[in-house]
Length: 348
Image (tube, rainbow, N blue to C red; front, side, top):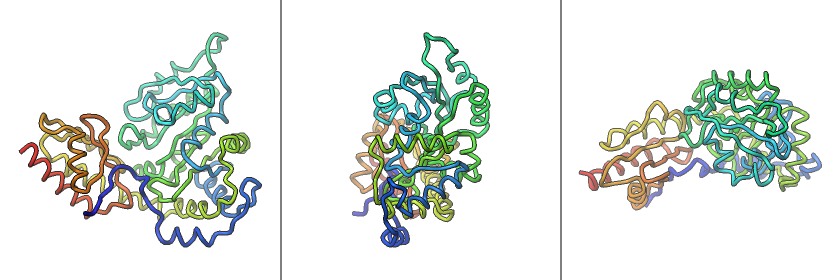
């Protein structure tokens, strides 16, 4: 039985062109700045994101943590939207490694409400932690891959500049955001002082992320990358994949994933008892709320798995589907047929 995997986009595999480029890449000791492909990748990524420099890191979690350490000091406080990935899903690294406090701010569209963010910034008082960083995220993982409006990023940037606070962007899927907004990626990263971008999700590289920022920031970040074990020596094969991952053709391809997600969302929403906010199906995520006394989210996920379709239950009501290069339009149509069959059997 064929398996259609809609659990996550991290399943995306390198294509043949990426594999071919990887194993002909020259190698050198990257910690000493002697790996040609890592140097090339870091220079290209910096230019692409409109920053002075960038660093190749093993993972997005490490990239975000390196950014936090580079922008802050122990005992400081950082501000982010209340469901930001840095706060909910990166194993408490900000507190455990960075000695940082997190102040959460509401933001239903994935970005903190600017007026609430302004109120959350600590006044200069010896009794309070120092507000040292504002964190943004695009696309927003917890809200189903939604793209926060750039108008809010602009308003937050103005507040940050007025208060002298840097902004870090968790841009793990920022190219999905750029495709959705139909803008160049710099139109998003321009609102941040630093940005982390994943190469190994929908872009298809096997390993790695890049962290970009100012020259001074990158010098601090380089030290923290080494401290956290991110000096990987001969990285050329991985960085050759990263260069292809960031190529214009590859980033533009994400639109197909978005189209497949829309097709899936529209089809599932026709099932009685399944509710999907189509306005929030913006990129490659679909969040389906199952509202039936005869079939909850976990039961639906199990029934799908028994028929070769993999998805994730966020709780008893919400099923998450994520499209990627590994899933084509025909696969989506097959999933819809399977879901309808399950629904008819269980609900009638």
